[in-house]
Image 1 (tube, one colour):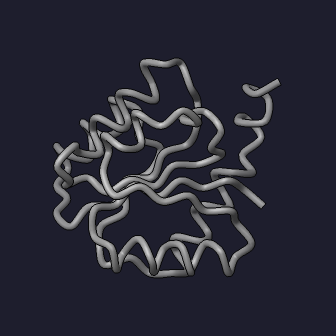
Image 2: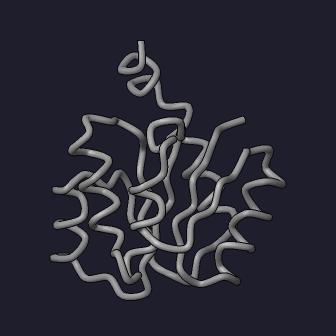
Amino acid sequence: MARVVVVEDEEIVRKVLHSLLGSAGHEVTRFNDGAAFIESADLDSADLIITDLAMPTPGEEVIKSVRERGLSIPIIVLTGILDNRAMDNLMEIGADRVIEKPIRAATLISMVELLVSAPEREEADR
């Protein structure tokens, strides 16, 4: 079981992700905007972060905040529109994966499992 943080401004998407990840055995904490997550006291208690890109405080700010604090938490970015330049930028600032919406449940769960069990993450946390 991993502690997954979902940062998404659309309530229905937050609920679906919470249900999907919860049914896969993960503990899920939800935030409705990047600012609320960035201001949270337990920013570094997550094993994985899933953030939407387009929000009032965008996903880029979530990524930058996590990386500026020196945290190596895996980050998955969800976006409705993706081009190669935007994807390159997200990866450069610290995203681990980028998924274009609509999201396939099996793809997301597989990606979550891969990222939370990655050997290099375990080594970095020791």
